[in-house]
Image 1 (tube, rainbow, N blue to C red):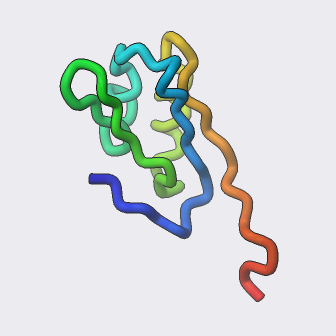
Image 2: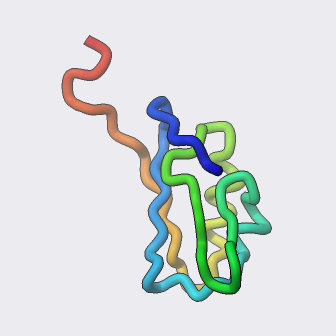
Length: 80
């Protein structure tokens, strides 16, 4: 569902032990988060930068703060 993008400028990490399935992230950024069944969260760990605003809102809307958005660091020697 969510194709991996090596050119992503961010990384999304969801603590699935903390996630309670409230699905607020799915409403804020449906292109990046999907709830399957009652409790299975599927998400794009390397979304495109164009979705940054929605993903940050999704992280802020999580009642248990299970979502972290990190800047994706380029690998050493990348672009040489």
